[in-house]
Every structure is written in structure tokens, then in C-alpha cells.
Length: 373
Ligand SMILES: Cc1ncc(COP(=O)(O)O)c(C=O)c1O
Image 1 (cartoon, rainbow, N blue to C red):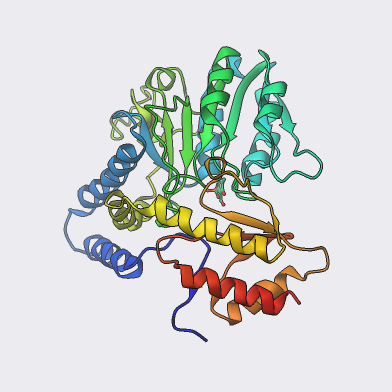
Image 2: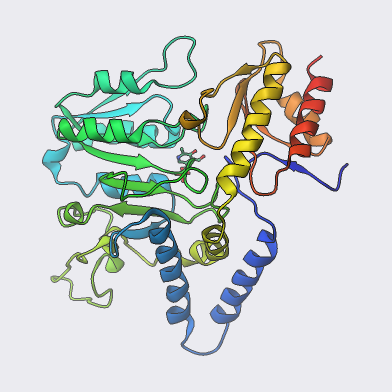
């Protein structure tokens, strides 16, 4: 077993040098604060959560008061859906690509009866690996109340053309949300250039944070119209307003909160977000490594399951394994060689990041050559 693991799992969990130590230090501070016999716990941990929110705002250029934390992307979407004015969805279509993250499809599918919309899923064409933008546009008419776009997909690393899709959606009068999860942290994204109506994400992939540290961001004028049904004392401007007949939503993104916020995940993610904010070579390094993966895959006669054009790809490269390959045995065999990848069905997912090097790419392909005989 090597002492220099080749790590290609940024589509799942991102790593950076010093992550374990920095996260341990932040969580140790948390536990010391939380275990202290005084009354400083909440001010301290809510302060750390505020830093999490500010770092995220800076990352995507979100105006103050438009972003808050959420437990995960699925609950973030639930809060949005259950908050929109009913006529935004009732009697309309909700449009989604078949290669969205399945959890979000499960939620959208399950909510259609109660919220009165019809879910329309745009399929992947036979022989393709991702839903084409032109097929989304062809299905997207004035009956679409809402679309959730996937910035970068988890099964092919396809990066959709957000500018074109959002502009089309707004011409159709639809609300357009974007799931940033697989792209954020490795593909540049700014709300100044990309006017989504809302975005949802998590912090654990390319941003290298913890699970449980999701976010919701929404356009300020739309926030004023939403009344999340999942609500509680923290959805108010003053959580300590306990008059049972005087519930009132906070004027900003805090209205998406409900009960006691899950602060620990935010605290654990702050060091990673700080680290990420200080980097400027990540995208270039990723590009060099993904180009090397694609070149070596081509030499090995493997099938690319991601867009070949770099501007249409996120930070991962997916390769389709031949029908007779035992994907689990392949992943196990690579792991035994100190190379970490995963498979979704016959799709091998390769995501090089801050701790991955060109030598690691070489080792991946040496391992593949030995195992794919
Ligand atoms: C595109 C995308 N969206 C969302 C998620 C995660 O959703 P949740 O935070 O609800 O588990 C993932 C996880 O892999 C993903 O790849």
C-alpha cells in the first residue's frame, strides 16, 4: 500500500492539504465553547455560522441578506418549493433534466400532487451521457413555472450553458433555480454574471467542507414573496418573539430557517471556505489533470462519458466501462493500489483536485491497464 494515495473523489468529498487538522481545530474550539460553564455558547457558534454565510456570499457574489444555511440541497429545495406563492406552480409544469441529482427528482416528483404542478423530465438521448441544453429549451415553454438546472452533473460532469438557459427561462416567465453542488469551487460562478432566481448547494465537494453545510440563496424581491411552510422561531426577524399570534417572517433569507440551525456543520466548513477563498490556481491545476486523464483514456481506448470541450465540463471526467467489466472489482483493485475513484453503474468517475498530481493520473492508468485486461 502506498503512502501517497491518488485521490480522485472530489465529486464526493473534497480535500485540501491540512484539511483534517484545520477541521479538527475548528471543531475542538466548538466543543470547548459548547462545553464551557458560561453563557457564551450561542454568540460564539452563531458568529462562526455568520462567517460561513459571509464566505459563501463572497464566493458567489450574493447580496447581503439573500443567503442562509440549510442542512442539504434537498431540504433547501423543499424550503423553496413550499414557500413560493401557490400560483407560481399550480396548474403549471416544473421542468427538470433526467440527469439532475436523483434526490431532487424524488422530491419534485413527490410534491407535484400537493402543489398542483406536473413534473416534466427531459430525457438523455439514446447513446448520450447527458441531457442536451437544446432539448431543455425545446421542452421549455410558457407553461413552465419553475426549472431547476444542474450547473454540473454528477454522472457526466456536463456543464450546462447557464446564460442561455436562464435567459430562455426568463423569456418564458419561469423561475430558474440552479443546483451549484458539483461545480461550485472548481468552475467560476457569480450571481453578478448569472442571474439565477435562486441557487442551492452544499459545501462538501470541491469546496472541501463538511456534510450538513448546505445553502439557499434567493433574489431579494423574490424572497419578499416567499412564505416557507417549513418555518419556526428562527424564520423570524427576532427568534425570541414568542407571541403565538404574532409569527412574522424575517425580511431576508433568514425566513428559510426554521428550528435551531445546524451550526456544527457550518463551523466545521469555515476553515475549508477560508482556504478556498485564498486559492487562485485550482481551476488551472484541475484543467491540466483532467486533460491528462482524457488524453490517457483516449490512448487506452476508453469511452469518454463527459463533454470533450473543456468549457462544457465541470472538474470531473467520467469514463464508460465496457459491458463485461466488473465495476466494483475495478474500484477495489484500484483502491488496493492506493488509487481512489468510484463508479455509478458502468460510469467511472475521476475527479482530480488540490491534493491530486500528474503522477497520480499515471498511477490511475497503470492500475486500469493492469485491471482491464
Ligand atoms: C448535483 C448534486 N446535487 C445535490 C447533491 C447532494 O444533495 P443533498 O445535499 O440533498 O444530499 C449532490 C451529491 O452528490 C450532487 O451531486
